[in-house]
Image 1 (cartoon, rainbow, N blue to C red):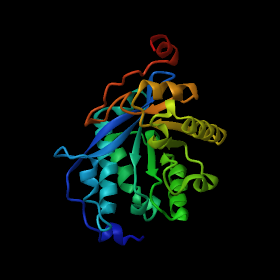
Image 2: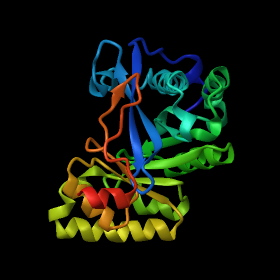
Image 3: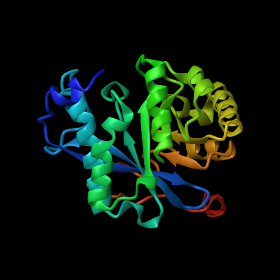
Image 4: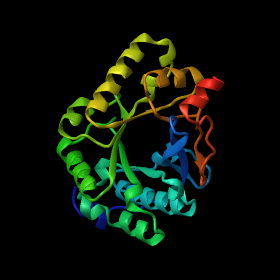
Amino acid sequence: MSCVACRDGAGFELPITMAFQPIVDVRTGTVFAYEALVRGQDGGGAGSVLAQVSAENRYAFDQLCRTTAIEWASKLDLAADGASLSINFLPNAVYEPRACIRATLAAAMRTSFPVSRIIFEFTEDESMDTDHILNILRSYRAMGFKTAIDDFGAGFAGLGLLCKFQPDIVKLDMALIRGIDTDRVKRAIVANTLNMLRDLGIDPVCEGIETFDEHNALQDLGVSLMQGYLLAKPAVEALPPVSWARPVEDMARTA
């Protein structure tokens, strides 16, 4: 990639907005972070928006998502209680991390949103240039941002990437979480993955939690950071109320 993507690339013409879904610390009953999820201003879901992304406009799309997420997070006072903002980024839309971060920093400065509260997460479900993604992650860390791998266990990077770089957060793919309460194999895989991440000093997040049984199974495995419809569905241009965001002792008494 080169500066041509920024200078000569097509703009992203479809108006977008953001929905927010919390990542909840179930041990303390607090929101650890809110993930910003792209939505169309006409009510279209993420799929309808992403269908309009091409090689020619992906840089503009990536930049628009970052600035829109920060602007709405500031409007909603997202960081007031110590929560962070998790922004998804496209590794193949970043040609030089320190150059491509300028719009993000400008949006944070313009809205007075604390840079220390920004997490950059990417999905490892596409084949990627490992050296390129490592350069991005190391550069973001050096600039004070936190980093996260999303959908871990479903894609290409996996353990090979962890050998070379340990992000702050790893989000386990929902395919490993769905039905974990009745699946011995999934419990074994998740339990050992959790132990590995903790040994590496990485905070694990389990996402896609939809039932109390899944929640309780993960709680038994020592998971504290959870995300899913059971806790809260994404809310467009709003911070949704959280269900079951209470200390674990209270949850055990009411289960």
